[in-house]
Image 1: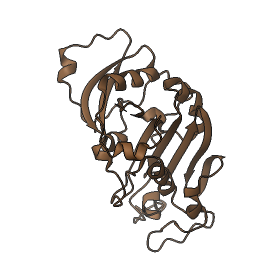
Image 2: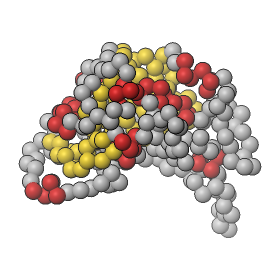
Image 3: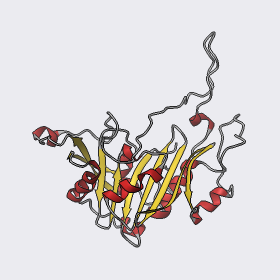
Amino acid sequence: MSARAVTLWFIDLDDPVSFLRTEPANDVGAAQALAGALFGDRVLVPVEDTDLASAAAVRGPHIYAGHYGGLAVLSCSLFATTEPSMLTRTIASIRPSAAATLLHTDPERSLGVFARWENGTLKRAFAAEPITIIEDEGVPYPFERPFWAGDRPLRYAEGVAPEPMALPFHPQEIAEQSNREWLGFRFTRPLADTDFDPTRIPVTTFAIHPADYVPGDEDRGHQPGPGATGAEGAEGAEGAEGADGRTEDTTGNESPEEGQPPRRRGRIARYFGF
């Protein structure tokens, strides 16, 4: 099954792919400052070290950050947007960088979103579900060509007729390919032999508290883990759109109860992953 992921990378290196393969350590203090730039006067408290693959899949109240000098990453529900172009000013305010890249994939919606900014200018933004393009800004990158040419078609469940208006590719696959091109990996397994494993990218979990919060001993003992749940996001990120929390029927076509209309096949059942 395709992976859920929400990541925002800040890139100030000529070759971030090779750099990640050196497995750089996370500078927790710098990661905290980076995450703090998103939340103004909120108090961010580090609660756990984890990995990017675990963090990127989470819907929850925390922010995850990794800082590796010329390369840095944030993962937070605030970036689970279908209109990445609206994040341009927010991203520039967090860390002005030579490049910034966004990835958002959601298997429940068969949604794929990716974007790239260079020196604060949006170069490409794309967001789509299989039959709906939500945002399509900028000139497509060369890696997109096989997708638009129909060389990577959508796969349908057995017995499901192809959607006549569907895109010629899975939106999540093109989104993850952008991450592979720019950072050397994707989240969906199995990984290719050439993919770096995102479980080897260290990040820190930060709890977000009000401005007057004073960290205590209980914070140092709090270990929520990457699967913690709670209210999504936080206030005060200009232009950021949170995840809409929408879910789909994933049970397929079931026999309806007497007097009830038949249930529609959900998107997970209609569209295979990749």
